[in-house]
Each structure stands twice: as structure tokens, then as C-alpha cells.
Image 1 (cartoon, each protein chain N blue to C red):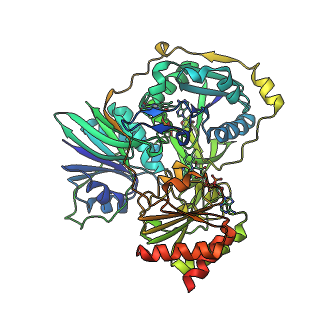
Image 2: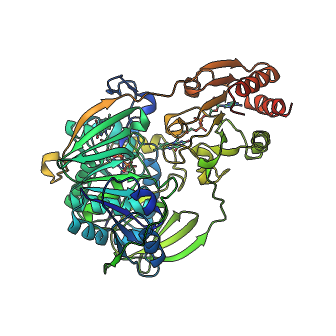
Image 3: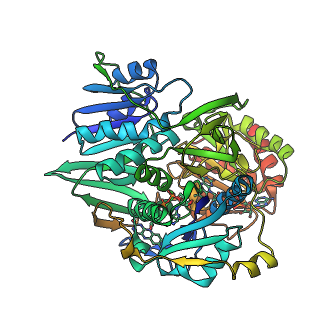
Length: 256
Length: 299
Ligand SMILES: Cc1cc2nc3c(=O)[nH]c(=O)nc-3n(C[C@@H](O)[C@H](O)[C@H](O)COP(=O)(O)OP(=O)(O)OC[C@H]3O[C@@H](n4cnc5c(N)ncnc54)[C@H](O)[C@@H]3O)c2cc1C
Ligand SMILES: Cc1cc2nc3c(=O)[nH]c(=O)nc-3n(C[C@H](O)[C@H](O)[C@H](O)COP(=O)(O)OP(=O)(O)OC[C@H]3O[C@@H](n4cnc5c(N)ncnc54)[C@H](O)[C@@H]3O)c2cc1C
């Protein structure tokens, strides 16, 4: 039996810029494991240990997804092996496409009955990938998951649900999106990184997967107009003077 | 053109239906009360799936997808909640629809739907043309339209997937609506200890404002409730005045405050990105500046 963790190798748009014509320049943004995905890997490791299952990582993305650095970063997070679909075409994939590829990959690997994902990716954050994967597979999907344990009727899934916490018993396969604060993932040590280099890595060609997605056409891209700000700097060395200056300015603006 | 609303929350239906230009049907996975709340909205029909006791709405995503697919709507508005997204995922796959999170506007002409939305934390806006069905995700915020004559409710029999809630505990957390506050004091990781929230409370009292925060202060550490965090995955607010105290100004946070009339930032790091989006930026230590502002307001 296998438990799969979907992880994304992505850049933080904080470090990207958009041109006035809406082209996103990613060159200064270094890709990394999407911020919340190590939490999913760590929750997956605990679930796999409890169920005596193999824990595998799945990723779909552009060519940078298959670099040794990306593979090592993922494998040092407690995964036993990874399967990667990397293709230039996927660097511009939408959530529908990403999910179709991951669902097809899950079917083709086989023997997977639990799929974990992070809460949201750092670059898009649509939170739709787990839900679309579940739609493809016909499996239930639950969000806000903090722990998974084997239980008499299948699996006990603990999750945050609005203001409550719930335990949901799931007896068949499922997709679970892991809460970003489920646990604090351990930082990989030297040993983890060295061991990562020896773990199996499988590359699956995009054309070997049946993963069609609806076509959309980008009619226009633009950099959004930001509200004009005054941009007044106040030196805070003298706190009393700075506070007085601020309060006077806010009163002048009529916002107090 | 036809629009469907998909949600597990009946009271979201009137608000979401007001976004559609034409005839709307609502698909509700929930209790009888939820279906009735939905029927009060400007909808032609409520299609209702009633979950078995102790079965989460997410287990009915395939059933919802089947119901939606048989009606073949051009646009589906799904509520942007965990349950709404679960239903939306199955519906989108069944319809072969494009999925657009956070769509701000859309209209269909000659079978092509044009959708506008912001991407990558709002650094770009994209306009898409989709020659097929589209699922858009929206928060149900705003006032509902006046109730109309109750729309007919059609119950569809449905089989859920195998998932059962076996245990539920209410966590004693508060729920605040930051969107209603005229002044919001946002606090970030610049605050060193939970006890120091007292400083922020003093300032909030002096400003008669609500306290909000960045995501790390509500998740990971739980100094403040999740309903107080602002940003891409939290609340979107448009107060008259927003103060960002000890907040670096990452775009995932700033995406939620750009509607504020005035933004004030207090940060020790004069290179913090928050200053680029502030009207007034005080470069200084919040532990000195915050009490000073509270004192200045009292005079
Ligand atoms: C440099 C760059 C450029 C891009 N340009 C475009 C573009 O021009 N047009 C466009 O439509 N999209 C573009 N994308 C984004 C697109 O490829 C997204 O990967 C896709 O939309 C996935 O949705 P999401 O990120 O919202 O995932 P979410 O649903 O927010 O992610 C939730 C979880 O799903 C899993 N997951 C998400 N994506 C993957 C993945 N690829 N592999 C494995 N697990 C995953 C992870 O566990 C993640 O935590 C770009 C991305 C990058 C990095
Ligand atoms: C998918 C995704 C979604 C996210 N969604 C959200 C969201 O909705 N909302 C959100 O807030 N975040 C969100 N985040 C997190 C976001 O990226 C940032 O990590 C977060 O906003 C940073 O919070 P912060 O500003 O409090 O902390 P930091 O970035 O650590 O900033 C702390 C600041 O305090 C300053 N400081 C330190 N000491 C003092 C002092 N004594 N006086 C004054 N200033 C001081 C520092 O100079 C620094 O600038 C998301 C992240 C991801 C990956």
C-alpha cells in the first residue's frame, strides 16, 4: 500500500514582478518546496509509519521540477521515493491541468489509496488542486486535516472544521489537504539530505498520461493599478514626536 | 446562458445569486433549513441534496457533480469554502470546466465566457476566454438581496461516499467580522510575546478599532483567532484606517488590505516591503511607537 504526497516546486511571487503589460518576471524568484508542502510530507510520514505503508512524493511542473536540487529537497522530507512529471508545457499549467496530470499519475502508479496535499501553493494558492484530483478519482476530499491514523473502519482523519475539530472515519481511498499548522515539520539534517540522493526517482513522460484539460485562452494580462499612497516616512527615533506627527496627519486626513 | 450556484451553505445562495445576470439555479448540499434559506434568494430553483446524519457534505461531491452535469450550466459559482471547493472540484471535472479562483467579473457571449481574475497574490490580472463551462470561486460576502417569494425546492436522492463524522468538539474560539470595522490594527511577528498583545489592545482601545493579524499569529502560534487574520487566505478588508504593526508586508498579507483608505506601517526595518504600500511609515520599534501613538491619541 502506498500513501502519496503531492508537492509543488514553486516560486514566491513576493520575489517576482509584473511588467505593465502583465508579464510576470520570475527570474529573481528562486523556486523551492511550496511553503506548506513540507507539513503534508511530515503528516504523511506519520500516517505511513502507522499504516506500514510506503510514502511517495508526486510532482508535476516545468523542467525545474526534475532538477537534482528539487528532487533532493523533496526526498529529504521523509519520502521513500518520488514520481515526477516535468515538461515545459506544465510550467504554464492551470489548476485543472495540474490536477488532471496528478490524477492520471496516481492511477498509473497504482496501489495508492491516500493522497495528501498542502493547504495552498505559494504561487497560485487556488486551493483547488486537491479538490480537482478528488473529482477525477471519484474519492472524497477533506480539508484542514491535522492527523491520519488507522482505525477499525478504515482511517480516522482529524481535521479543523470551522470553529470545531472533527474526526471523520473514511473507509475507502481519499484525498486530504493538510492544515498548514498541523505540525511543525522537522528541518532535514545532513543525513536526510545525503540519504535523499540515494532514493528512487521515477520520471514519467507527460505524453504517457491521459490528462486532458479544458482549453482557455488568455485574452489579456495587465499589472493591476495599485491605489496611490502618500508614501510619507516618519523617523521613529523620537517615538513621542513620531506619534504626534502621525496623529496630526491622520486627523488632517479625517480618518480618526 | 444559465448559472448554477454550488454550496454547502444555504445562506450563501442569496448573496452569490446576486452576482449572476440571468436565471440561476442553486445546488445545496445541506439540511432542510439550508435548502429553505437558499430558496429565499433570487433563484429559479433549488436542487437539494440532503446528507445522511453524520456524513460531511464533501462525501456528496460526486452526487453534486452528477446533478450539475445533467443541467449543463455555462457558469457555476461555487462558494470559496472548504466544502464549496470540494463540490466545485467534482463539478468542474464532470462538466469539463475551466476553474477560476477569485474571479472578479465574468459574462458569456455566443458561448464564450470572459472571466477576469487576479493571480500570483495579485501581482497580475488576467482576462480569460473560455469556450465551454467555467467554475468560478467566490466568497459569500456582502448583504443578501431582499428575500423573494420562495423558489421551488427539488430534492434529488443521492448516495454519499464512505465518510462518517465520528467525533466533533467545539473549540472555544471567537469569531469576529473584521470587514465591518472602520479601523483595524494589524499585528505581525514583530511582536515578541503573546503577553505583549496588551500593548496592541491599548492602541485598539484608543482608536476604537478591531485587532487583526498576519497568518503566522493565528496559525502555528495561536495568539489570535483564525477569524482575525487578514490576507489572501484570510479576511479581505477595506477599513478607513489600517495600521500594520510589526508586519513585513508580504503580498499574501497585503492582498487583504489594499482597499484601506489609509495605511500606516510601523517597522524597524526600513527596507520592509510594507513601506512601499503605506501612506505613513514609521521606521521604529513598535514597543516604543505603539504606546506613544496611544498616548498621542489621548491628548
Ligand atoms: C513559474 C510559474 C509560472 C506559471 N505560469 C502560469 C501561467 O502562465 N498560467 C497559469 O495558468 N498557471 C501558471 N502557473 C501556475 C500553475 O502551473 C499551477 O501550478 C497550477 O495552477 C496549480 O494550482 P495551485 O498552484 O493553485 O495549487 P493549490 O491548489 O493552491 O495547491 C494545493 C496543493 O496541491 C498540490 N499541488 C499543487 N500544484 C502541484 C503540482 N504542480 N505538483 C504537485 N502537487 C501540486 C500541493 O500539495 C499544494 O500544496 C505558473 C506557475 C509557476 C511556478
Ligand atoms: C499559500 C500562502 C498563503 C498565505 N496567506 C496569508 C494570508 O492570508 N495572510 C497573511 O498574513 N499571511 C499569509 N501567508 C504568509 C505570508 O507569506 C507571510 O509569511 C506572513 O504574512 C508574514 O507575517 P509577518 O509580517 O507577521 O511576519 P514577518 O514576515 O516575519 O515580519 C515581521 C516584521 O516585523 C518587523 N519587526 C520585528 N521587530 C520589530 C519591532 N520591535 N518593531 C517593529 N517592527 C518589528 C520585522 O522587521 C519584520 O518586517 C501565506 C503564505 C502562503 C505560502
